[in-house]
Image (cartoon, rainbow, N blue to C red; front, side):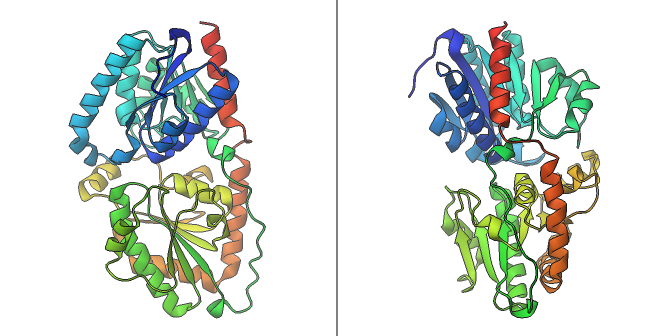
Length: 385
């Protein structure tokens, strides 16, 4: 599949993390369905590799997060940036599409701007939450931004950006929420299903897996029929997670690789790392608590630059109100997480109330077909150049 497309058909797409890989792969499929002759060269992850004509590098596997950790990857960023510069100069792609991952992608956008290659941002970074000055930079470097939350177009337009909301691309892949009954006769002995989502990057995983596991063990002492399911990415090495547990797993504890959200949608409650997974949970209508633990210097910087009162997308999209509990840094300990789980299991009506709030949130994010609409819009724009 390592082929070079004609100039008029060659599009370069760059994503840098697991969620970006997911959304970019959906966009690539939509571009190819809309214009079968298009040839995609990409940098991203395993999903993009499966659907691209030429794949240059698995950037999603690097997993750098925050403000401090990416510095360690600087030699890689520089090398890859130079390779993309050379690619643009020799292959002359008709367009660049970048997906989230501002830290690296704004450098790629500069390369495209210097070479008069039109650039589009699909799944724009959440610059409204921190470092809002970046919005003007994005406006100057892109032809159009495809934002994923309904309040974002106004934010970017005020800063000179050409931003449109076509819906949230998660709607293209998420199943409809299950209809659930939260009538539980005997909560103490009920067979509760507790889902654990410790993140996709190694830093997140190493900090949250032990905490989530201990929270489960505390919960199962009071609710002995609880089954816990820790959700792993399809390419995850289970041995890494076993090492983080520090012991043989409890009989009621299971590792799961759930490709289509089928099992996650059946959970009664979830403990989730802050990020895309929380929005996925919301679209499934599954109640949750959100946790996040950062490298200490990263946390200190984050406190200074983040401009929103909540870290979870669920609470932000709900109008900055606490639909789900957030436990950050030292608060994200096993005792506090277990207490939240146990409170929900003891009072199933709280689960029902949260489920209903999450269904309202899903309705605000548009309709499926987002990637198709974006692909059509990009191709139409290119056709008029």
